[in-house]
Length: 579
Image 1 (cartoon, helix red, strand yellow):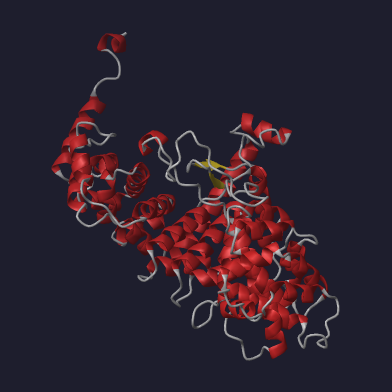
Image 2 (cartoon, one colour):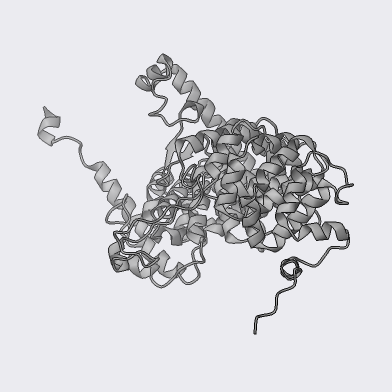
């Protein structure tokens, strides 16, 4: 018996079942047309925008396609194959009514696949100039979709480099107004605009190191043999412009940083996000802090001026003091303060801090910029260099005073605290004897291991300590800050760090205490609170030689006697002296 024939409407019914439920605004004629995707796209290709033929406008068709793309990943892939991106580009050049749904559709496709991003970036006419030219004057809905599309392109590794190249001359007009907080937090467009800035202006994090193949049993994680080469990603643009810190990406990012510093609007908007009392996602606040830090590193003089006008110090104190803000954000806030206090610094890919030359280049790169530069390198004690260093020192001291008056010391010291349970052992290991070797503290390996064993802080605590200690080391050059650190309870916080396993933390804490000991009253206080003798001993020796009535600990008294006896020994042999 032959099988019964399927009704002609079976295919249509199946397609209709795959679609979302018919929206109320969609007419029956448009819904019938929506059963065939290619018919919808063909309708958009027609120049005539009249509703006579199918009872629908181009804007309605674009909105329906966007709804379908949001509801079905399969539809997203189908739209790309049918050439919807080229159709959207033609509409954006001439039609205002279809701008919002068309850019919304492009935003959804940009986040969907590598092939879609390749098609968007390779489209002609180019979409990027259309996006940047339209953003300042378009409607809020269109602005939201444009920023969403750019954010999707900027945050993906396969498209970031090409996007930077295409946007290198963009003046960022229209973005500051979108970065704003409300009483209920940040809107989606504000979040997208902030993440877009973060991706454009900040260098991407280096990829995580992979263990050697020998440690993986001779096979890659995917199960391929070790000798097999991984297949490239799909898409004709895969592998181009990857976020690997290339020179071209860095140059394009530097141009965008220059555009961001031409006005105070962007930094002001970012600082408002940083200090917002409204609960925000950690990634959002962290993105704002990263951009502020990147701008300070790019052009410290201009960025520091905008930073102060936007009450950046108060914003950083708010981040450091708020208990509900994650440690990751506090670590970034301390890094912002460090870069504000110490200008013309650049963090290399290896994580070390090296001095910057003129125009943001490394010293090796701009060593031949001018004869004057070469002469200054050969004559470090020239009057011009001395005057320049004096001016830089005065500016640094002024920034330290501003930070002190803003109240940064207590939250920075709180960030330096050692993990609970490490303080007693660490302090014991940090003190040692101290009298047998005056300048080098005795820190036995066994004691150091005991001090740090079994005690680990929360994730990010080590980086937060490093940044906070760097700030305190710089600020302790100022006498008022030395007194402020001690008055804020800094001695019991910093003493355990003398036994830290992290070199930068240990050295910075030692330098802060040594700087504080330069003041006589603080040197005696350090002695009373159990600081190692090498921290305060020499200053107390000078003090007690000039004021014999002052008495100190037994160790300091013993050290004073040793040094006094050494100073009374004749400098020359008696026979030579007699001759």
